[in-house]
Length: 374
Ligand SMILES: Cc1ncc(COP(=O)(O)O)c(C=O)c1O
Image 1 (cartoon, rainbow, N blue to C red):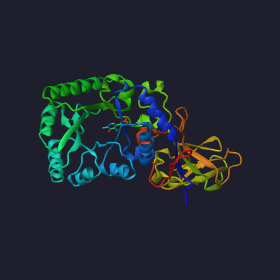
Image 2: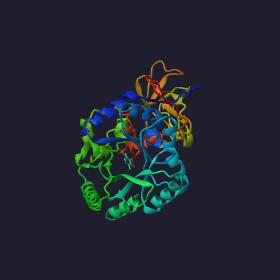
Image 3: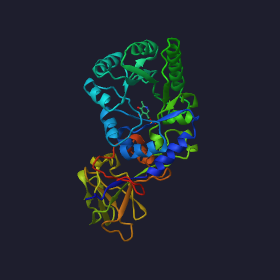
Image 4: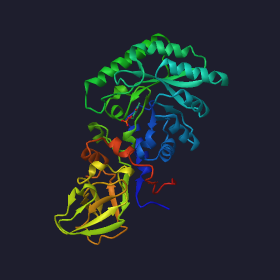
């Protein structure tokens, strides 16, 4: 059984974006593909398989559960878990050979304690907070933390990383400040003889706009999915990979003066034809698009009318010739210049494309046309 509402994911575009980003890097710089949050809504396993095939060196996710899903599906490249790992998830991290992030020494000690009985060594990455003020040891404490980790027999410090707060804001001074603090932390680690081999910092924006942040590895997310993370990305041939589609499930004709949907926030100013699309805010089509979104039906942009419901959205198809049940409707288009691009829709909702893409619900099937993926 397949729902008439689906997200169409173009894996060739994901692969092409990977290649376009790689072309910006020196050959020795590795790439960790960020595939957390179900690969930003695109489907973690098919995306990771595509990237693994294309030569992506590593993957990074937010939580152990996401990494286990990849391992079970046969992803064999290293997987970094970037979020804080609760003590009761360390066993799974060991079992599935994941790279935990060390964001404080208590986590390091707990991993050491749990790894010791297995006689295993665990490769870990130290998170250094250089100004995001979210997760990680403070930059001035990084060398001491790295030394402490070096003293733990079952941990191997494979990497050290930081994360930028403002890399998407052109030339923002905070990025330079973070880089400076990161470099100082790395110098102190080098001086203490505990500098790990994989230093990384750059998200998509920094990969594209801040070459000095490439170090040994970069960690793009958004750009892999073809969305431009910053204005400099216009010069990179990124292709959006996801379209969100549905089909007309029902057509209702209303008379001028009649209202529709919750709160009767829309009233017909002419006799109108309304198409019901079986997609609502529970599928990730934002409620904020009530009375202001647009959907392409029969090649025409049609206004969303009334309140977006949990499972349904009404669009005014009065001007669509030959509209009928089953006609395809596109709610998000994989095209930078479309008013239905993830960026344009996000702007209309006063949010960011990350939220639009990751918000597409689990009950929306992802289809992968022209690929072996199902
Ligand atoms: C630590 C870390 N690195 C890299 C990324 C990728 O960021 P972007 O999607 O902007 O490339 C994220 C995303 O939130 C992140 O949290």
